[in-house]
Image (tube, rainbow, N blue to C red; front, top):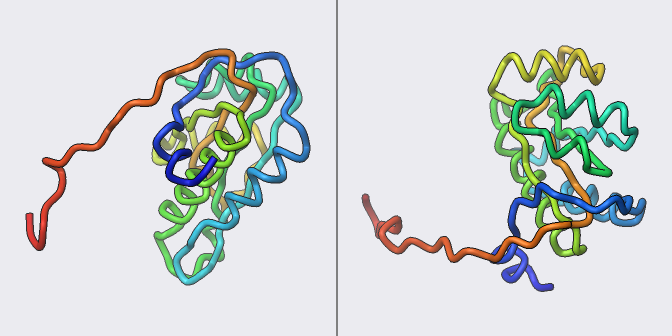
Length: 169
C-alpha cells in the first residue's frame, strides 16, 4: 500500500479478532513512529507496550473512550520526556506526528488501530502515570488500541475545498 492510499483509507478501528499482533508488526509500527519529524530533532517520545490482558483491562477502565482495549490484543501508550526537551512545548506536535505514523503503519500492515486521547485531560494523565509507573518528568499523550480488524469501515472522502485559503484567510 502506498502512502497516499494509506492516508486516504485509514479509519479508526475499534473491534478486533483474538489474533495477537506479531513482534515483527509491533517493531515495524514503532520504527515508523520513530521516523516522525520532531522540533530540533529532539525525539522526545517513549512508548509503553501493553500486551498482558490484566493491564489492558486496567487501561480500558482508566480511559472513558477506551473500552475497545478490553478486547484488543495490544495497547501502546505514547509519552514524552518533557523534562529533557530542548524546544519547550513542542512535544505534543512531536508525539502526535509519531502517533500518526504508527497509525498509518498499522493500517499498511493490515492491522486496525484507534487513537485514544489522554493529554490534556489532567485526570487521565494522572491516572495513567499511576497505573503505568510513568515518571513525573514524562507525560502521556495518548493510548492506541491495536489488533487485527474484526470490522470494516469504508473510507470517507474528507476533502473540503472551502477550508483552503490562498495567501490569506
